[in-house]
Image (cartoon, rainbow, N blue to C red; front, side, top):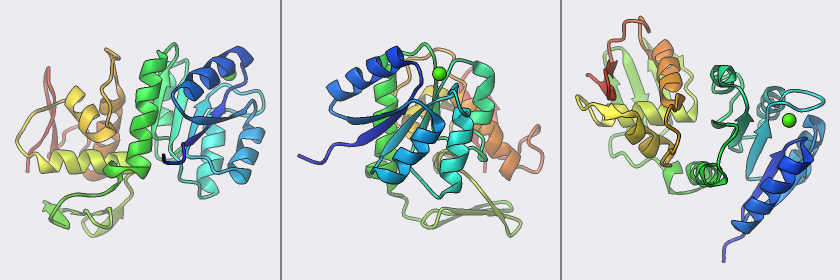
Length: 234
Ligand code: CA
């Protein structure tokens, strides 16, 4: 059997932490717990951690600050943010923080585990491998290199997060076709969401438009299909 993945649970509420540890160990994960941001950063330096579950409200610093510091230290593990507040979502998914995904409390353990498994697959499994035949895709002034994951606009590099890149690649690979938010979640994030009002896709599409469109509020490439989702129009 393969070595189990080790997750770092960063949570200061002992009851919540205990519940998570119990549920995650039951699923076969190894778990390290940290109850402060400082202890989380120490654990990341001392142990082989495959994924970080990060509470936003911590006693010594915010979870966002922990995320920013671990990315600044060059750590690339998937980070899943646990937040109680919808309005933080935009900040969480922003490039400067470098989190991969978030889940709003209260969440079901089942939903959390499906997102953890999806993030691990994206980072370490089959979804981490690009599978397109064409290395380069060009539309208008935008050039994507699938092998190197580089994107440029008018010859200037555009910095996309891994999720933004996967989202763009998926849309571009399915031109003219309206794709639902659920289908995008499944194809790009690799899980089936049970959350009705999931804003994950919309927030990432907005960030993507800001980076590749000349006018993000009047997009040329990534179009909104009312009542469905999005489509790429080459
Ligand atoms: Ca907390």
